[in-house]
Length: 255
Image (cartoon, rainbow, N blue to C red; front, side):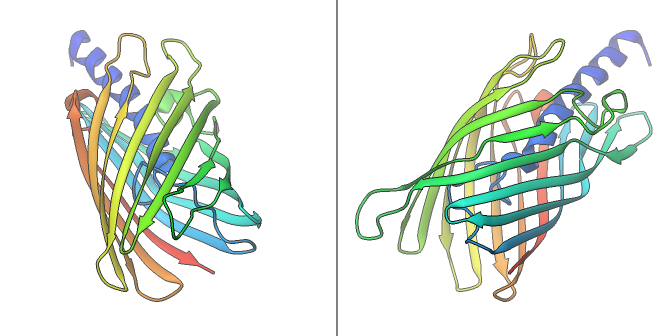
């Protein structure tokens, strides 16, 4: 591989790793856009999931990962993601290893008015702890922080939510950036909900490009406690360097 081609693949891998690591994080599973609704007090959510993003010259993501959410207090949720990350550059071997750990706290400070127009409002700050190996493309090598505001409103079988926030993204060649997203979802049957989202992210590396994209997804409830979540989408802006194709697939246990 020539020097120019190697540099292109390496740059693509850096972008993909940076995008794919938060993707699971940002997702209000199975989406990247999140919502302000915490897990009910003293209840749990457990996800076993896989997600990945393909860019020109590289594919990276999580296979598998574990997400756990717990309602620690009324309106307050604790959150952790423990991923087994992978990075598969074109023309090179696939690397596996433990990725960056995500920690978060979701707090809803305004509840929805079911008979009026007042939406839910909440915050969900996150920390990405650099437990993955940066040199192997399995982590960022530094602590990232995300400070978002999310809102949500339901109308019969329809629910819409979105918002965004600011990512603090230190490290050589990196820059802080903004993520914005909005989603519309419909409960089609008692067991099936389908939805779609659009999102936009400003450049996260010096000399990088903004990105926009979409995902379509569904949630299927096998029972009150067992659920299947999936989504897939791609970039709409600068897709070759940010998101040629991405997916999320998870089994969820709630109790």
